Length: 203
Image (cartoon, rainbow, N blue to C red; front, side, top):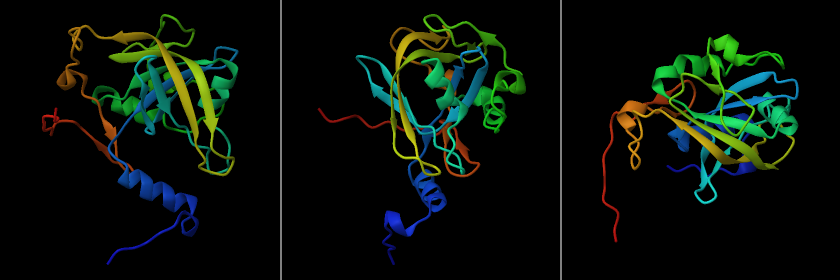
């Protein structure tokens, strides 16, 4: 038996659980921002992907919280239009999970998770020193989809600098086994890339 649902028949919470359970696995953007006083923020987002190659654009989507309030990431981008996007990896997953906590504004998730900061060329926002991949970005556009709880805002960020460990990149290919990226499923579930298969694309 098939179930036919409409957007209007589901609550925002039910839609979130349905979509996050079906649209997966999702890569994780671990995004650093800062406000005008240089207070840093760090938060993971699994609504994330590449939007363009030339120019190089990353896209991620923070949701409004249950009270329809924006995350600190959006507040900071309105003040300082820069961010550093890190790729979520297995080696730092505990710290990544720690930074998903809801902290009062201006509290530093780098400090909470015990993460050292490092400078990122091209932007004033710091990167995670231990992260193997980081993209320094300037804000291109924020497209807001509403003001109700769990409404998203699509952030388009243009890459201006890239940090990648030498052991991961040979100038042509990324060593995925060394990078160990993780993906997000639903609820508290994540996925590794240890089970892969290849299919040749048609001409």
